[in-house]
Length: 153
Image (cartoon, rainbow, N blue to C red; front, side):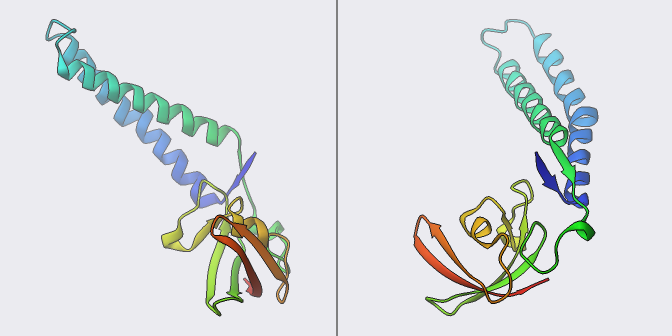
């Protein structure tokens, strides 16, 4: 089971609704039009329409599974004194002295450009359950990092 913020759950539901009610009917129409053009063995448009149909169906099924196995998390129920899902964490890399701030989110919400890291990433996993002042060792592909938690919001 995955936990999602209310905003991300709504985004996924909206994308699914758009795929089912807008994109898929258009893909179906394109496929019918290409099929009506005759010889399917040499019909490039038909193959492209079939590929678009397969991709659309695959994405619909994936999003349905995500929503089926997800729960919206209430931020008010999360602990405020230690790192948990939806915590905004400021930490310092002790080797370089660099200070970074990230929000810990589910894998479906991860976006480094927005400062969101997955709780299943090496850094997110190492930070979970820590409190301000605690040290965390991150075993990443680039080596072991030592991080000090500065604050949690």
